[in-house]
Image (cartoon, rainbow over all chains, first blue to last red; front, top):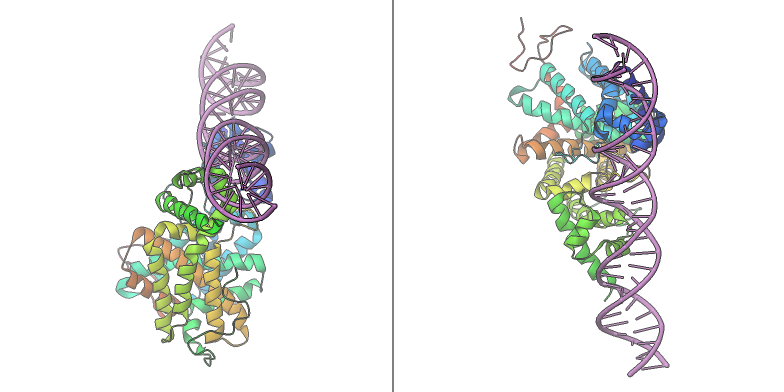
Length: 211
Length: 211
DNA sequence: CCGGGGTGTTACCCCGGGTAACATCGTCGG
DNA sequence: CCGACGATGTTACCCGGGGTAACACCCCGG
């Protein structure tokens, strides 16, 4: 029997374990779930990273395709942005554990690691960059701006989405609005609040240094 | 001799090692750098997390204080935002390894882990939230918006700053401008590019061939 | 019958976090 | 002076996880 079908089975098992235990699931646990032992996993995937990569590749494709589609939707720009945001949030909402796997960079990878954006997210960032470059007239700075914004927007949605998933402070729709408003310069446009604090010490209920 | 001074020495050693090897440095390595062995580290810090926490606390205080100061600078809002962005970028530029330690969540922490924002960054996010709440008139949604934006902006700067540090595509000043422009709604305000691509065909970096 | 490519196993190595048990030094109190 | 305590430090070990070596089975085509 060709190797592919088995690979799929093993990936399914890995998926189940990670769904259950999160991205820190051990190779032993995954092997056990598949009803086998470690060396087989290593035969198929080389090392843990290979397994994770194969696993993320599967899920990434879906989310990435959805985002890409949303990015080229023929809508007003604001609506299109909202659509993209909603697509991402809906994706992470649907399967949180998978989402964690995708967004959480593998710890054990010292190869120029430490990147804030995991591979899957980097690809989303690239999509955004491409979309901005091809859709928005930004003058001479277009390349720099598109790249910086691609990363920036992705990081923004990552962090905000993470918080939203954890605390669920509002509906998805409202969250989409909040983020789109930020991107739309509402922070810049809003009026100043009557400055209650001169230059020093605000009355701070929580206390600045919690020891 | 009281315990504090030794603690400081050990933290200094840990600092040196991490400066050299990055956040993945082992406890053995840190102990060796300090000229001692592991159990002493554990006596002082409980576990690796305790060590890391103590270490980050030191560095966080500096960056956090700088950001906090920048957030309350008596400037035009745009200038203040730029000042905050510049403060952060300058901070991570000065000591990249420390920055990685601060921004990279500890992998082995299963306690509600997986958060996109490491503790140090979460504190920065809180500062931003507080600043927005107290300075900007956002109407009824103020709390939700301030919280979401605090996280979002932090994540944006994290991801974009990360990319900037790695690839150095431009000066710090220019990067600050790019991010401030994004926050100022330049993405929303810019004109559409003549849509050269109907539904198919990938983006063309040499310029859209408008037919 | 043989051989190769798939399946699987047990047993092991290495390394890193974490701990137990033991030895030493200096200072304070009787 | 002596003992006790609290710090210093040590060696040696446990555990668990990634990763590998060596061996065994099973089936199919030549």
